[in-house]
Image (cartoon, rainbow, N blue to C red; front, side, top):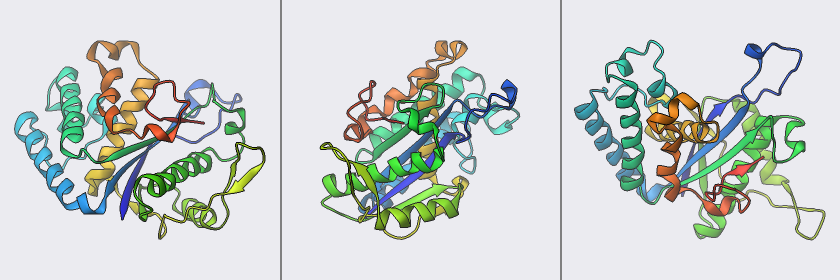
Length: 263
């Protein structure tokens, strides 16, 4: 059995030229799935407890404080993060946590799906429900990973609070009918037979593994959409730390060569 913990960055809203710039949805929408084996779950949880203890001792961040990429970089009134000190110190914490994840959770796997609404890889990505399409790709890649790399084992999905009803409908539909393009033209149904039960909604405050997905997802956002003033802190390089865990087989068309599925 495998577990995939999912978080998102950005929102799935479509661009609307009738709205002013500050009312526009985000340019990006990203999903990150953090996959671990059930047999590793206990050890990896213990490792995360040890990582949090280390962070508390070295940065003063209490264990009860949620690890959240956006808040680490820009606390905006979050006193727990302000106590760490300067942005340089907070980014050092971010960087160290990612390194500890790679070294202490080495058999985990990361799957990423990304849409740039201004420059989509496929124009069809902007038609219909963006969230639906992104989740569909993520679920497909997860199911394929289970089939090809995990000897056909079964998998569960745990997601941060999202559109639970629509996500449940999507997974149930994909178990029955899931048309995918064929290399020989047309399409065929590749049902997601390895994913069991409905997705389970978890509050990220209560899940270290969803917090990991959040950190990775935000780091990917900062890599794909670098902010000039942040480059001197190396924020645009944070995602590169977790590159060894990324499922490269998820996409052969990713220019970054880490398997990001670009919609």
